[in-house]
Length: 308
Ligand code: SIN
Image (cartoon, rainbow, N blue to C red):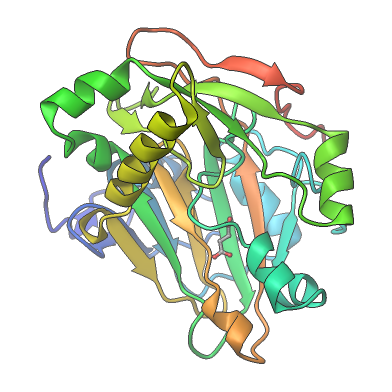
């Protein structure tokens, strides 16, 4: 993989400042609430493909602006196909510490699901997610992302050959409380995805091991599957593959959900700090494995774009 200290993308005025060698770049010189030019959209797309997650500072987005921005890059999904939304825009999902904290610290920690790729229990997980920070803790509350294409690339050849032929079952966790059980039960999503997918745009092979959703490896004994998954999960979040983002009010993160997993913070549950974020996800395609076989629906329906 080549690395550059990309200064400015000619023609669109967007400056790209990489944050680590393998993942994450801050993009400057663009107002996401304004009318993006075709060149700006193309530059952001290219940066997203290269850096997997891109960040913007000091953006003045409200819900309408957030959805409008998302529409420049694809078709927004409903806010959350299982948990729904209380927001006045059906595409906007609230990620709020104060709500999850109401049921106590333990419940809150369980709700913030550990390393994951968004909604891989669906046959067609979102292709990208756009998260904006509205109320941001003075410190703490960082989010981390990992580059799953690099994670695949850094496996040994024998392990690559093994995982390329395997598939895994992705589903939501077993019920944790009544509300969760009711919502997950009402829309029981499950899918079998290849353990290595081929990125539809870059052609990169991706170690598709969304830790919070993968429950078993198809055809393996539970103990074998668990041992292999533990190895892959630990590998996938090696610090070399990751980037950590420190939020400020108005910060926006835009990630390629086909090539990354991310980790929401839990340190804020040890503080009184509030944290109110909003997320819009873009409708995605059915993943395909190295052998050309697509994922398989096990339960529920594909995610459809939110109708306007
Ligand atoms: C998410 O998991 O989509 C949100 C991450 C965060 O709140 O930092």
